Image: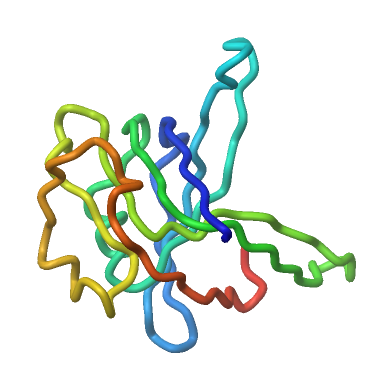
Length: 144
């Protein structure tokens, strides 16, 4: 099972792009501290697609505290200098706000299970692990 939960802060406003298929995707970075040593900070790249990307573009901003529920994926591409670049990132399946201003908003990143996340789904529990999510496939056309 490939499942990741990360709690942390959004480092910068998300980037929203349009894929060749016409569907949107969003990318952002989440920063989190090590539970054992608060002096270590880790930065994780996160991507999401379609309706979830639209949600992220509309509501997620730098400094928001969020829970990202997703899976790890690995991809590679050749950069402009001809070097192979390998990227490990989180494909978000669900995003929940911890910040008080957006605490009632969450997004399923799978439009098949939750068409346009029924507008904005109310987050009645702080535990995103209690909800079922399907996996998304990811193809980024080699852009970072």
